[in-house]
Image (tube, rainbow, N blue to C red; front, side):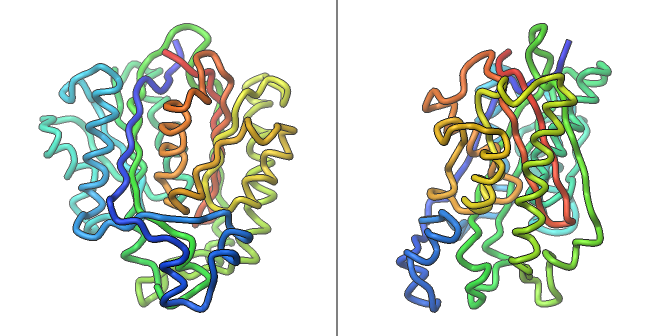
Length: 311
């Protein structure tokens, strides 16, 4: 039987930061930000750490999956903004969830992290190593954002999403995945010595437009599917123009692509999961839909998943 997503959760901090508020301290405008990125708002964790966001999303995912925390055999947290280098966020939320003895680790694939974590979980589930695995994508990007750099300050937000991965009914679940990286592009998106995000926007944009579309097509081929089989696309919410390029590559109409970037900005490893939670709530993803998840991030990394939704 295939591994699949059997429960989802998300957590968004309380403090909203709109484009008009950013206008007050940066030489930019709401119109400029929206037209180039699609972002209208983002949320900032003021008195919460990455592990706090992760824990709240994890609680919701476990409840949504209809299992208890002590049934989780492994916790995988995708993040580049840990509270500290160690212990891992996975170990911190293991303690708070009250799970004794299960495996716990953080992985670092930037904005591709949720896809990397889910692909790793698939292997463990399908080899019968674990019955349930908790995958969390979480970032507190506000703490590594240079709020004086208008090229990056307008982009990022904080948030968390979580998924419980387990066995699903025949024909459903994760049908195929693609993971990749190009370390030669690391210089275009990295954490600088001042502990701030540095990005060559032009180079990252070119890479992302090409790679998101290619990965989406590749994962469909691996799954034995065609573009015409796709019911819904959930791209990493980085930039509306990059997302639209992936949608057009698959020949999908606008209503078949997830779009939450206007609400939350770029939440890195959290963004794909956050979008799925919202789309499920709005009835945009239904049982037996063929759904493609695709993302890219610092590294440079990329990843895609093809799923047949449902338990």
